[in-house]
Image 1 (cartoon, rainbow, N blue to C red):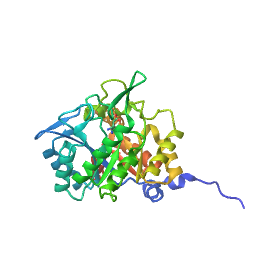
Image 2: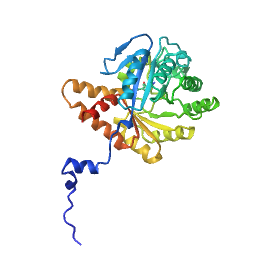
Image 3: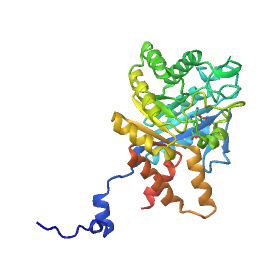
Image 4: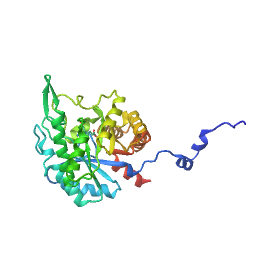
Length: 329
Ligand code: PBG
C-alpha cells in the first residue's frame, strides 16, 4: 500500500496541536532554588555577577523564603557564608553555625518548604578548598579521608537543625557512604542524600564563588572535581554514589553537560538532578541586560533542554523568574 507523503509539519500547525503533542513540560515542581545566607542583621548584599541574587542575613532570608514558598517553589538549596574561616572549616559543623541557625529559622517560619543543605567545607576554610590540606609529593592537596569525617559531622549538624535533605558537593571519594553511616547511626536513616556525583572542574562556577566567597586561595579544584573532557568517568562516579547510598544523583553544571545528563539517565534510570550553575545564569542575565537576547525565551529554552536531556530536578537561580513567568501567561 502506498502511503501519502508523511507531513510531520501537520502536527506543528497550531499552538493547540503543538501543546497536545509536546513531549517535555516544565513545571514549578521541577525546580530547586539556591539561596545564600550570611551572618548579620538586615543584610541584603547584591552579588554583582548574579543579578537578583543576594547574600541574605537570617532575618531577610526568612522573609524571602516566604515569598519563594508563596510562588509555589517546593524546595531551596541553602549555602552558608560564615563569619570566621580556618584551616579545617570548623564553622561548617558548629551546631550554631550560620547554616544551622538559618535552617532552624527557615523551618520555623515555613515548615512546608523543603530545605536542602549544601554540605561542603570550601566556604568555611580560609584557603577555600573543600577540606583540610595536606602536602603530598610537594603538592598541596585536600586530605580525602580526614575530610570525610568532617563532612559527615557537618551533614549531621544540618539534619539536627532540621534540614530535610543533604547535598554533599565536595567530590571527596566515599563522602556519600560517610554521611549515610553518620546519619543512620544517629537515627536519621529517613533523610535522603542528593549527591553531587558528576561535578566537573568547571569555569561556570565563577560567579558562585563571588556569592559564596569560596574561591580557592591557591591552586584549583582539578584534583578532586572531574575533568571536563570525560564522560565514562561520570558514569563510574554515579555508580559509586548509588552503591554508597545516594537517593538522588546530580550532574553539574547542566548546559555544557547535557550529554552526561542523558547518559546517566539512560544508564541508571535513577532520580537525577542537574545544576544550572551560576555562570549559566549570569551569561543569560548579562546578555539580557544588554538587550541582546530575549531573557525569558532563552531561559525557558535552556531549562527545557535540561529536562529534555533527562533531568528530573533542576537546581536553578531562575526558579523565581520561572514562577513569575508562569503567572504572566
Ligand atoms: C561547592 C559548590 C560550588 C557550587 C555549588 N557548591 C562551587 C565550587 O565547586 O567551586 C557552584 C554552584 C554554582 O556555580 O552555581 N560548595
